[in-house]
Image (tube, each protein chain N blue to C red):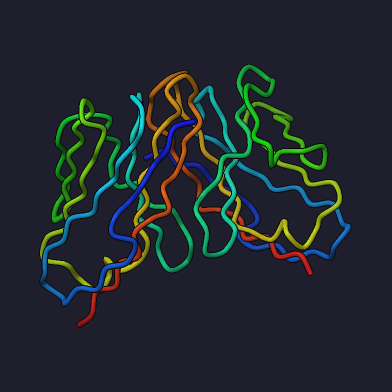
Amino acid sequence: GIQVEQSPPDLILQEGANSTLRCNFSDSVNNLQWFHQNPWGQLINLFYIPSGTKQNGRLSATTVATERYSLLYISSSQTTDSGVYFCAVDGGATNKLIFGTGTLLAVQP
Amino acid sequence: EPEVTQTPSHQVTQMGQEVILRCVPISNHLYFYWYRQILGQKVEFLVSFYNNEISEKSEIFDDQFSVERPDGSNFTLKIRSTKLEDSAMYFCASNDDRMGYEQYFGPGTRLTVT
């Protein structure tokens, strides 16, 4: 089945710094989503981005489908950005989402 | 903005008991899903449901699990005889088309089996 790898696994930032999270996937996909898991365990949908570039405030994402990767950019990070960021893709021939192992982000004041 | 809701937010049960987790998907959506996340691990697919039947299930979704859409709005996951290893966060999701469309996730139910 399709493989999803995220990097880095852990990231520590000072407040105000910028960061880039990466998601690599092993096959073509119809769906790619980025999530932020908050301290209460809720999955917050950040972007639906099977291709192209989107921006939402301090966050933006780019997916290069032909090269099978996606990037999530966080600018001017805040302590509330802390948590786990997951990338998830569908399986190509199926609509179930396959999640990566996540990037644990800690933003220090 | 429409959202997926789940109840309860947290459930504690004893090993061997039956539990039913409830979800109300977004009203015009056609596909429904359950996912599970054991503490500290990634989110895993359990089952997808379309047109009143299971369309796909994972190896995790064994005979102890069942899903049902008992009416036009609710979507439930039943675990017949809970085990300690069923302790996890369970997420319901829905989307409005078959392939490649955004899935909307509920806030999750944290199940603790003692």
